[in-house]
Length: 336
Image (cartoon, rainbow, N blue to C red; front, side):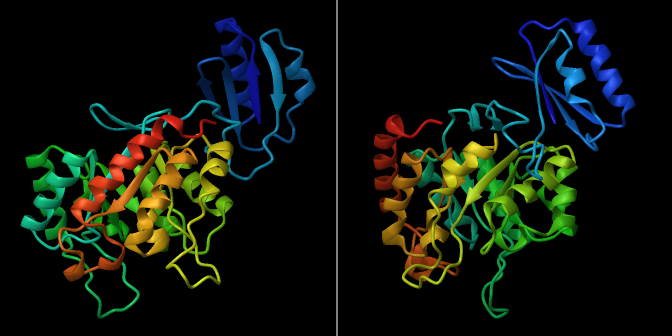
């Protein structure tokens, strides 16, 4: 349930209303937006008399939220959430960012050369996998803690914040200096991991599961927000369908749908979404036009010899071309 207050409400009346609501064992959140102040209620609101609240002088309207996700719901929080990554680097609310780098960290020289190139092309955030979930147990699983240290060293030298994927709760201490913790598609419904990340105050990049609905993605985000962490970035990375022409089916429609349903920023991963380097640029352009708040792109200095996902990784030159096209489209991107 949300209670929408009138303009310039009396603070004493707000305090009195909040105290009364808390006596009803409700979790009360006050959200002050650009145009409205909203009181969001979480808990059993079935016994709350909406009509009596509507008669209060400071109340403009009362609405029940029917969807099972409350905290991530735009009805609960009308203004866009802006996630602060680093000084001057924000995502959401009109702030567009590109995350770029190798699928997996293979070595220090590799990461540094890619980081310099993608930063020069216009990316502000360095991505790189240290722990890699792979379908085959014999495939390259990443360098683990060593890979994270290579990313952190690149962060210090190049001056780019970093994003990397976590696999399980036990590795969380290793991510203290990682700016954005990524939850991959396979872990989107690892609820114990989501609960633990909710106790942190670090930005979380939450990827949509391979066969997950939009509501399931939002419910996973709700797990994190229920723990108190609102710094969440949603990521559309393609879903599994009957189509075999591409690795996954990139759901561009998810961008405006998610932005309508939720206040959280939404980015798109056209690399995993297509699995084909030739398709990354057109799908990135489509995502920008649809109103995405950012992109996450796999870039490699030698894709042919990459240890992971070389087929979908852009060369350094191709990434530069993609950024030039994206910057042309950005001024005309769909605005909700």
